Image 1 (cartoon, rainbow, N blue to C red):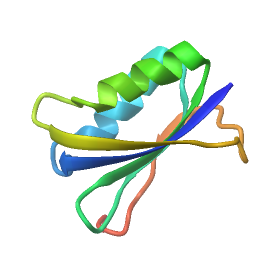
Image 2 (image 1 turned 30 degrees about the horizontal axis):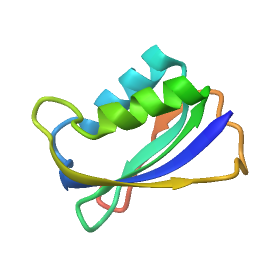
Image 3 (image 1 turned 45 degrees about the horizontal axis):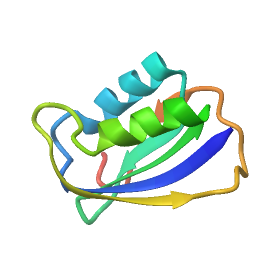
Length: 95
């Protein structure tokens, strides 16, 4: 099982990035979460089989059609939690 912590920069809020990522993760069988951050970036933790995690990381480099991803920071993490599903979490910018 692989776990990656992502920080996605660019035009990634207000373009359905989180919901699109949640749906893509469901198709790939990846667990974890995604949320908006106050600086306009999106943060995610993705966990699952190596090939599925890499596919979701690759997807995050472009995101949904309206997104304009500038860069993705990726950190390998030791799993502290095991995620059974992928959820869209509220971030500090959500009301």
